[in-house]
Amino acid sequence: RNVPSAFIWEYLNGWEIYGGLEAYAQLGFAGIIIDGLGTPGRGRAIHDVAYENIHGCAGLKDHVTAIPQLKKLYPFLDFDRFGIWGNSGGGCATARGMLEFPKVYKVGVASAGNHDQRMYNGFWSERYYGLYAGHEDIYLPGDNTALAANLKGKLLIVCGLMDDNVPMAQSMRLVDALIREDKDFDMLVLPRASHNVPTIPYFIRKKMEYFIEHLLTPAERGEE
Image 1 (cartoon, rainbow, N blue to C red):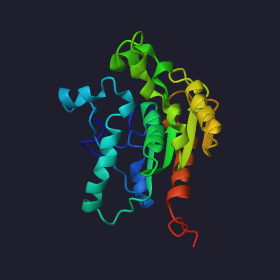
Image 2: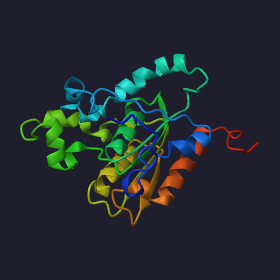
Image 3: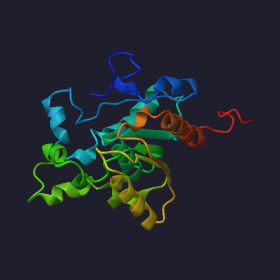
Image 4: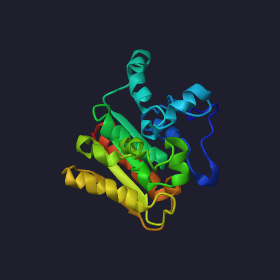
């Protein structure tokens, strides 16, 4: 599961497991974490939703469906300025959110994303999709590049040049698809970074600056 049961802000190896939400809150952002269908730790019936449905990103549709309810509970929040970020599978989910729900997510930071499960480690993909041989059609929805034409918001794609888990080729393939669709986006390549992009201080700063620039008003940024 993703929703924390305690306010623990640091994870192993310096990774901010909640993406620095405490710091963002001090800037005026509201951080939302939702356990959708497919999230482990909630029982077999919920977990099984993820099988043959990696592209569902552990209930990404549930996150979007929850927004009307959140509006009723917290009317003081601005639901026209939604941002999303994630690393690895979360990077895939971030791009997926921006491309599948472009009217909802306006800004995204996707780092080290495995954007096409056909290009990722077989021992992981086949665990959740089943064997690739003879079931190629099941893998097709897991290709984010097929949705590149849908991009409307601000997307920052980040990858580490030394990533031996999700090679940079995954991000470059998405970049190529966006270019072919004549879409504007931003990219950051970290030459010395591995898969552990969220531990890089430079990335932590750039991610925060990206959300500040594209989600906060000039007044909220202290420019007026």
